[in-house]
Amino acid sequence: MGSKESKVIGFIAQKTGTVNLLCEGDSAIVAVSERKMREYIESIENKLGKFAYEIKKARYGHILKCLRLGAAYSFDEESYSRFFPLTKDEGKKLVEFGKDANEVTHKTGIHLMRIKWI
Image (cartoon, rainbow, N blue to C red):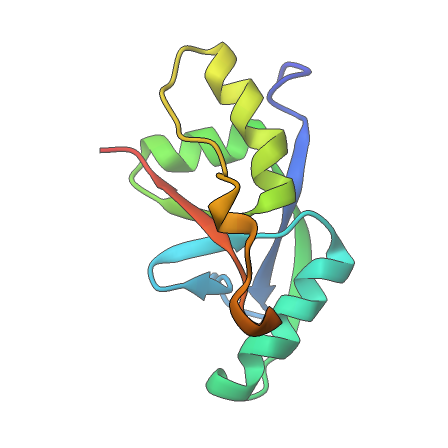
């Protein structure tokens, strides 16, 4: 794997003992840090029940491979800021996280950018 492909974009959470990832709808959530991923898990667990998760690094090359296979990812703003320039350098057309996306109504919720290649 080349140096670009091995770059850590963020972290994913996998339910212990399964292949299931922490998702928003059909897309795996990518958080900028392990700490941030734990915060996402805690905020979502109230809806899903209690599960044990393993937090793993999400590398650029693996994300690209999975996107090519039809997977979808939802990046938080900071992890997307790592993903976006690498993908843009390869000629892929993506939108940037806009200023409007940063405004949080009542300071609740998680802003995510969903990516799926069609």
